[in-house]
Each structure stands twice: as structure tokens, then as C-alpha cells.
Length: 220
Image 1 (tube, rainbow, N blue to C red):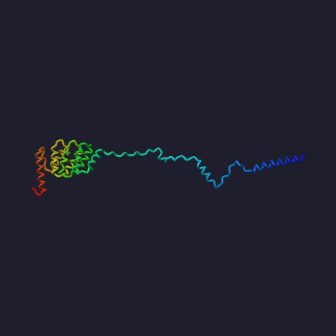
Image 2 (image 1 turned 180 degrees about the vertical axis):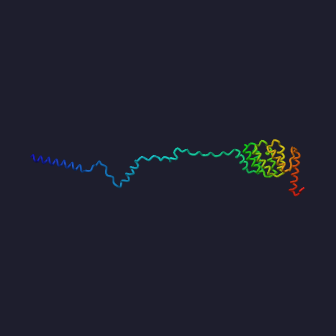
């Protein structure tokens, strides 16, 4: 009986030991399965998505704190330029355009008056129309640069326009070109008549008569 009990105990011990060994050899059901080789890229993609995105790139070192160069403001066109341009592009005849500029001169600044004067002289090319300019050359309120334009134009006119106008200027004691006008007359008339203005006038008339005779083929 005792031997049988011992055999049962021995069998029980062997059963227990065999169960423990079996349990130890069985793979754990809680451990994650090994990743298949084909799935490696997917794992890498998930790992990449989980990374923190890189910070934005900083500007180049030379541009950090650099102040952009100032933009040059467009040059302002003087108001008189618009007025003169509007007259010149009005589609009128040369004489009409010149007259509009002549009417415009008193209200222009000195720079505008000088520019208008140049256009007036260029537009009035016919000596028969010089009477439009004559009041301006006697206008002593005009600044010196404007008078220079009209005086230069006068010296390029025909003698029948130039000499009588020079005589008018020479007789005006307030005109800035009085002395110059008298000098030019002396050269043309081959003599200085001093303060005797009637003699100056007669000399101019005689000069023009002789010149007209030469033009007409009569040397008298």
C-alpha cells in the first residue's frame, strides 16, 4: 500500500514537472509578432510621419536685418510744363499757337516764361508776324533770361524788322539792352548819332531804302 502511494506521488510529480516544461516551451501570446520583412517600409513611413517637422529656413545671413534701398520718387513736372504742352498740342496754326503762348507768358514763373519765349520765337518765323513779339521785347517786367531769348531772335530777323526795333530799344533809357541796341545800330549805319534820335531814325530809313534798292536791282 505504501509502495503504491509512493508511485502515485511520483507520477504526480512527473505530471507537474512535465506541465511546467510544456508551459515554458510555449511561445508567449502577449508578445507582439515579429514584423514581416515586406512590411518594413510601412513601419519606416509611420516613423517618419511621427517626426517633428523641421523649422522654417532662416533667410540668408546677408539679408537678415538689411534695410531695402529707398525707391526714388518720380520727378515732379512743373505745372507750367503742362500748360505749355497743352497749347503746343492744341492742333492750331503756328501763329495761333504762338499767340496763346504770348497770352500765357505773364502768368508763368520765370523758367516757364523763358521756355514759352523760345517756343514763340520758333513758331513766328515770318517777319510779317513779328508785331506779335514786339510788345514782349519791350515788356520790362520780364526777367533777363526771357529778354535774352527775344533779343537773340531779333538779331536774326531781316533788317527791315531788326533795325527799327533796335532803334526803339535804344531810345528807351530803362531797357536793359539799350546800350547793346545802340552799338548794333552804329555798326549797321556806320556811325553814332549820339542822343539825336531823329537823326538815328533818318539813318535807319536811308539804310533800308538803299537795301531795298539793292534787292530790286537798283543800286541808287
